Length: 250
Image 1 (tube, helix red, strand yellow):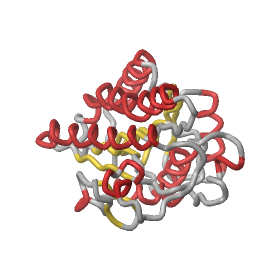
Image 2 (spheres, helix red, strand yellow; image 1 turned 30 degrees about the horizontal axis):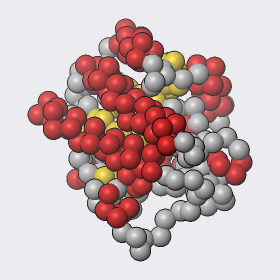
Image 3 (cartoon, rainbow, N blue to C red; image 1 turned 180 degrees about the vertical axis):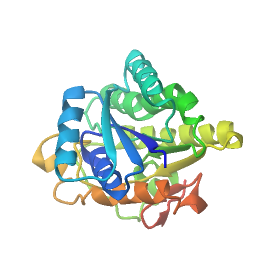
Image 4 (cartoon, rainbow, N blue to C red; image 1 turned 90 degrees about the horizontal axis):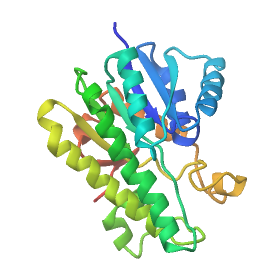
C-alpha cells in the first residue's frame, strides 16, 4: 500500500516532535516529513526518533514559516520528491509575553497566524492531489472566545499577558475555517486542534518555561490526538475546534 505523506511544521521539538514519534511508531504506511526552521535540528530529531525504533519513514525539509521564499522552496522540494502530501499539520508556533505590546503581537501574529496561512497556500496544490486531503491546525484553547470570556473558568497562570498569543490563535481558527469554506467541495477535511497545556519550548527554552512552571503535561497526548484524526477516528468532528476529550466552543 502506498505511503500517506504527512508534513509537520515545527517538528523538531514539543508537540511536533511528539506527534512525529507517535505517528512513526503507529504504522509503516506513514511517511512523516519533519519541517523545521533549522535543518540541523530536524536531522538530529529525526535520528533520535529513528534510534528508538519506528515502523514508518521519516525525512526532513528546511522550512521557516516567517520566510515566504523558504516556504515555497520547501513546497517545491516536497513536490518534486513526493508529488503530493496527504496531511498538512500546521504546528509551528510561538508564545510571547514581552512587556512591549508591539513586540509580542508582531511575533505571535507573524508566526502563529500569517505563517500557517502562507504554508497552507504553498502546499495546498500538493494536498489537493491526495485522495484524502487533510489539513490540521494546532491552535490553543486560549484562542476560544467563549472560554476567555468566561471569567470563572480556571486557566493556567503565567507571567505577562497572553493577549497576543490568544489573539493569534483565535485568528488562526478563522484561517482554518475559511480554508474549509473555500476547499470543502474539493474534499479537503480541516481540523483545528488544541494540544493541551503540554511541555514545549513554545514559551521559551529554560526548564521553567518548557515545563510550564511545573504544570505542563506530556506532549505525547497531543500526538495521540493527531493520530486519531489521521486514522479517521475524529471525522465526525471535522471543521470543529477539538481537543483530546471533546470539542471547545469558538
